[in-house]
Amino acid sequence: MNHFPEAWGRPRDDVYGPYNASYLQTTGPKTHTQSPAVTGTSVVAVKFNGGVAIAADNLASYGSLARFADVKRLRKFGDSAIIGFSGDVSDMQYIDRLLESIDIRENYSTHGNTLNAKNLHTYLSKVFYKRRSEFNPLWNHILVAGFDGDKKPFLSSADLLGTTFSAPHLATGFGAHLAVPILRRLFPEERPLESITKDEAVAALRECIKVLWYRDARSLDKYSLAVITEEGVEIQEDQQVEAQSWAFAETIKGYGAQVN
Image 1 (spheres, rainbow, N blue to C red):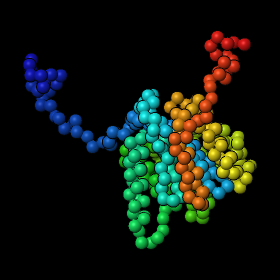
Image 2: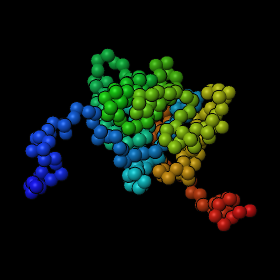
Image 3: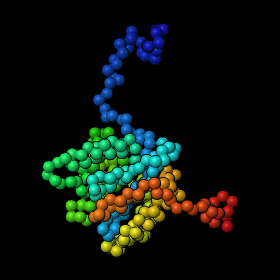
């Protein structure tokens, strides 16, 4: 028997031959971002006549723990675009640094052109797809809001696979199940965009954030809201869901001791 600890659990060399440690080496994909640790939940956005409104709460959860309560997940790019992030916070910070370097390069360029929201969305979707193709994805789902090259309101999403989708109103995370039905009821397809006002869009987002606060265990009652118009970007941070008691829970039937 071999009494040296470093050999314990290994086959005997005199029976099976010397152990080949090269089998432990691999050229496979990196896996250090395959399990996001700190994540943000829903981002909700809606287009209106003359712009786009977007909102996201300020919570970053460590698994199921509401760990960080002051994480701003809306990022301003230039003078006419907002990016809303859900998913891994560390990957969000990486993309934020990437966008900052692009913004600096654009500001110092000599051609005088700047990236609009549509250009920015196309670029980020390619970044997501490249990282996905390298089996090292950025674990985020983003919404890009602003204006396209024709000065029309623009809203589109991109996920960690590089998949893109555009609609008059969008949501990520749990908001895709809870907020989108609310927005579809308030702004049905047959209703023209020109009839939707800024105040209606903002009120709808506040209602969606309130529903998510009550229904999504990974959300918070503090949130950020941004409105993008031709005049510029207006960001309201540290907004609070309007106070509402849980007294309505007593009237809900079918749970607990209430059966009638």
